[in-house]
Amino acid sequence: MPESLRTKLARHRFNLFPAYRLAGGRVRYIASDWQEVRVSIPRSWRTKNVFGTTFGGSIYAAIDPIYAMMLVQALENSYVVWDKGATIEFEKPAKETLYARFRLSDAELEEIESILETESSTTRTYAVNIVAADGTRHARAEKEVYVGTDESKRA
Image (tube, rainbow, N blue to C red):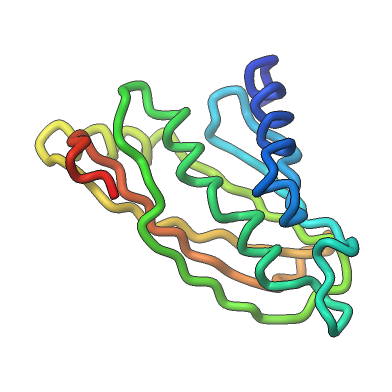
């Protein structure tokens, strides 16, 4: 699905946000329905550690807010969405640009909305691989995201 003018503008705003920009990640694509986002972590002075490989903090910072933002935008109703937890496993040092692709299916969004018809909240876990251009996986992260109907439960 192509980007819309709205998602292109969101992508540019995201990349200009100081906390995201200074960590080195770049949002490269946002589908017009917010169900797919692609991120890169270019190899640069901002992302390189003392060993000459990509700094783990840059990798994590690049992927950290993505699923929460996707859910905020993709869900039709206004729910409370926030990151609840995360784990990341660094598998292989990287000396090249890394990429991550985030996806939410229609079925996932429907399931969340179905749960929230009877429950006040749900916590979802999403996995994302951080890979090189050739597909070699350098890290794997899991993001735990809270979605709820009750403002009082917001952290």
